[in-house]
Length: 279
Image (tube, rainbow, N blue to C red):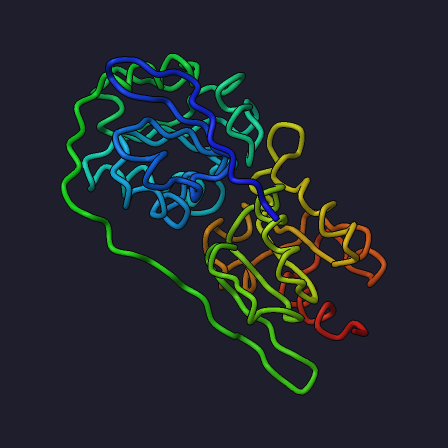
């Protein structure tokens, strides 16, 4: 079970700066009018969980940016909603760790509204967050909900399901191989363990500081669940179908290695090998 930590880093007459290990942990109490710093990647999929609560600004990890700029594509999404957004360099802060972003994070990219608030690449996360806290929100409208998941393979031995976020995986996916657009950090894999899948494929989140983008694979290994992560330069983070179809494996955990899975394999081949493993 993933603990949904909410840390109020600072609070003053302008509002609150709230840290969370996943931006999907935003809620009615920790969201409205706050500057949210999340350990998720700055993608539309996770950030859309937060925008429904009308935050003042959003800061998330750039996940190494990756193919098609998928690690930071929510910056433009936030621009359209009138919300300042800033991405944090993955080599400066641990993905899936909000406190790390606050303590050591450095800004790598900003959107139009964040720049209007005085934020620039190279600033510390603390400096940027404090500038954004003084912002008067310009939220235009509620963002539409977005969910994408589908079963891409099925036979008598089981099924492979793809989803753009681990948050779209549920109890129905027990004993399935799940391919998710999320990073392979501790929050993602903590959710995956609860489902008891037959195997897991994630993005490597660009690796980043202390290899935080894949350190969750060890959590799955403890449960005997094979898991691999694919390079952000082979498939866009946040796109479960592309992770499955285009992904190239960069990291494997011990149970996956025992099946013969290795870096350089195609993700869809790895997923099929997981599906064929004995129950």
